[in-house]
Length: 307
Image (cartoon, rainbow, N blue to C red):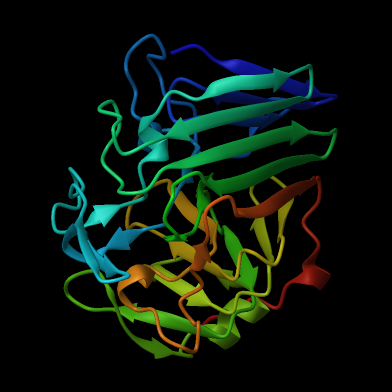
C-alpha cells in the first residue's frame, strides 16, 4: 500500500489513493485521532479496515441489492460481509487518481462506468472527487459526485469515519429522529428515545448503536477525556443524516456524516425524508466535512446523560 502524506504543523494525515482513496491515519503529533493504524501496510488491506473511507454513490445498505428507479429494476452485488444487502457503494474498492497534491492538500478523482470490471457493479456512470486538506488544527474532507451518464439517477455520499473508543468517550449531536432497525438490519421505525441524551452528551458505554439519524443539524462533538482532547465535526447542509455505529467490545466507533437514510433508494417518497438527490446528466452533488482538534476537555460543553 502506497501512502500520500499531508501535513501542517503538528497535523499529519495519510491517504491511500490505491485503496479507495481512504484515510489510513490522522495524527496530531503522536496522538492518533482516528482508529488505530493497521499493521502490515505492504499487504492488500481493504479500505474498510482503514481509518475512514468514502461512501459513494450511496451510503450503508440497499435492501437485498435491488432497487427500482424510473421503471427499471437494478440488481447490485451483495456485500461480502453483510451478505443480505448491497453496502457502502463501490468507490471504496477503486484505485483513485491523484489529480493535485502539495504539502497540505490533495485532490483525488475517480471515473466510473458500468462497463468497468475492477469495481462492484453500479448501473450509472459517474465521476467522483475527494478533497483532503489539513491545517494546524483541522482536517477538511470535500466530496463531489457528478452524473456522467445519459440517464438521471438517485445519488448520495458520506465518509465512514472511525474513531478510537477509549475510556469514557463522549458523543454529542442533535438530530430529528433515530431510525430503529429490524432484524434484517434495515430501518423499520423512528424513535426519539436517545435524542435528549445525545443532545446533552452521551458516554459510549454499553449501549450498542448501528443507527441512522435524520435531520442531523450538521454539528457534533466527540470528546476523549482520557487523552484530553475534543473533536468538533461540522458538515455542510448536503449532509442531512448521520450514522452512529458502536460495535460491542470493539476499541473503536464510527460517526458517519451522510446525505441520506439507509436503504433510501427503496424508500423515496414525496416528503424527501430519505435525503437522496436525483442527479440529472451533468449535475453535481457536493459537500464538505471539517473536523477540528482542540487540546482540552471542556466540562462546560457537556452535560453527560446517564440515560
